[in-house]
Length: 597
Ligand SMILES: Nc1ncnc2c1ncn2[C@@H]1O[C@H](COP(=O)(O)OP(=O)(O)O)[C@@H](O)[C@H]1O
Ligand SMILES: [Mg+2]
Image (cartoon, rainbow, N blue to C red; front, top):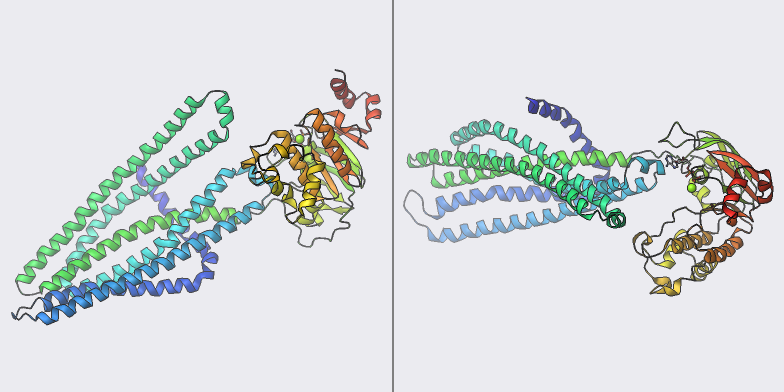
């Protein structure tokens, strides 16, 4: 009874889900021509296939001599020729259709994948806080593959089977209406139990997919944390955890396989039983002279064709249902509005080369933490060309200042302006062009050193890249790399130390040559000596730029024009290093801790 309730629930969902497939139309539309060709090929192939049993009938009835006892041997050869010709034509049509349809499937999948990727890459960081990148990836690959199955094969298989079914039924009726009626009666009796088992199979197959996804998600998490797993020697436990989860997916799969095996047995028995029964009736008709042997033969072939097409249609229906689900999930990604909207009528930049920054009463909380303010009534003016250091305990809101300036998030109240222009009135592209940032955890792409530095300026000349590399002291460690500047750095730069990654990120920011430079703990992973060297490069880069430096080591910020001290999202003190130490506030306390020993 519980079972019945769930199936009812699924039934209610069905029409809606299948309808979501129509949203694929924009992706299919450009390939109307290809689809029309495929359709014509499909019609031709179906027609050829439906003619085969007729050719058989002729072969048997005319070729092998008929009831009148004559044996026209000459005729036989041509009949075989016709049969072979038909088969060859059918083969050609099938192959061409296969090519055409698969082409459409592959093409549409690629387009869809690119469109989803293009939509996802524009999302603000908020989006990735709720949806894991792993899930995005699985939608990009798994869900698009499901759609590819339908567009690139199932749909045409279904259509072909539909033709085959309709044509076959008509031919059955034409060949022997008596046998046809009996056949239909039997089929109707059989279809219900088969559909019932089929439904169970579908439910179980969904369950088994979920289990597989669970265990791959687990594997992904474990592999990402491999160093931690190994250092805590938890391999055995993780192996067991994975094996357990994989075993669970095995058990679910086997439950599905059992039902499916039962279904197969039922179908084969039912179909063969029907055919044999009809054959028996037919044989009696033939001996009674009411039907020719050839007619009976062609009837049986048509019956087999119809049975085959019914099972294909059932399978295709399953694929279509799964693809409908996949389409829904992909469309969700495709149509997500980004939390950060680009203004419709962006103002032209007031200046491309200088930047005065102004935070005016900015109050902000992260979307996932509505109750805690990350920034609370922040007022801050940074003059063009000024170097300002942000210091304060971790969690104070320093990085958040950078996030808001780059418009990764929008403040809930207050405003931020660059050169007097509210940053939400200029285009995101222009805004971010003004800013070069060295983030707290620099990202290295799986490319070589050159390409990594050049990331923001793909057409920068080699000399410019090397200059930036010099200033950021990348040059210092490049000779130790196997291929110098052309050394491939591995995924996420795993072949570099933290300090080396930071220096590449600094070089990248320097090369961008933007009027605003944001440094978030940019030298935190460097040893004292490299830090002094990199600082020299940075000092040069800060000349004439508006620079915001976040640093924990107060020694790094002594030369800043101004130090802004933050705590709990608020600015608590401002001034230069000497003033602030005299004042005896938070900065003085921090400085005491760091400089006293
Ligand atoms: N993506 C986020 N979602 C929710 N809270 C965040 C997020 N990023 C930072 N926070 C919280 O906002 C506060 C300020 O963080 P942050 O600006 O990164 O501090 P810091 O001064 O160390 O750079 C912290 O309490 C932190 O936990
Ligand atoms: Mg930070």
